[in-house]
Length: 194
Image 1 (cartoon, one colour):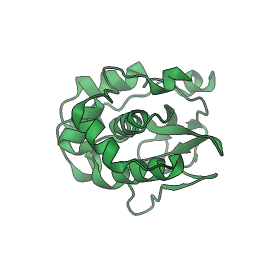
Image 2 (spheres, one colour; image 1 turned 45 degrees about the vertical axis):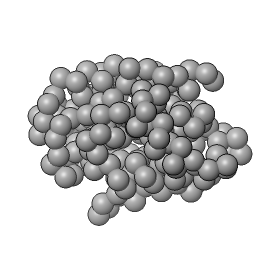
Image 3 (cartoon, helix red, strand yellow; image 1 turned 60 degrees about the vertical axis):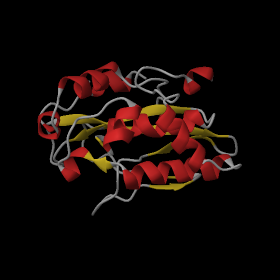
Image 4 (cartoon, helix red, strand yellow; image 1 turned 180 degrees about the vertical axis):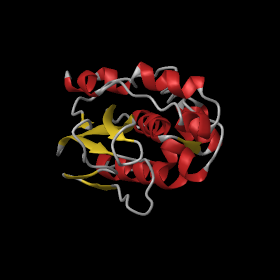
């Protein structure tokens, strides 16, 4: 389980700004801390393509600094805030239709947190808008997206670190629009093997 608390280059939870915010959002109760951190990231970090915001962020500290990120980057910040509060958290992925009408497809990233009362619980800080209402309400899961097409997949595996394909896409694209045209996709078969 220690790998779900690890500090990495991307999940740089020991950064002073992350530690300060994590302490501010902390509670004596793990569920309350998780909910407050989740809602803070969901509601205070603007989804890059929804708000047409630059730069493309990747490291948790960058997401906090610029207050914007794609779903993946937002999951990096949420993981950092939770790990800074000694809460085990990992990364989850779905493969979804980009325009909700079939091809092209892309990964969508979110988190899973270990809650002693419930076990692993998935939560999606992507950011709500018309048609998207992700909430923290364990044990009921309420993610941003469901599965609608045969080529989509909801991978149930919990990764300790973000997928390398995701990190590469975030680091190689510099504007929200460039990223939108180069969203990472690993293919249905890749996720299905986990």
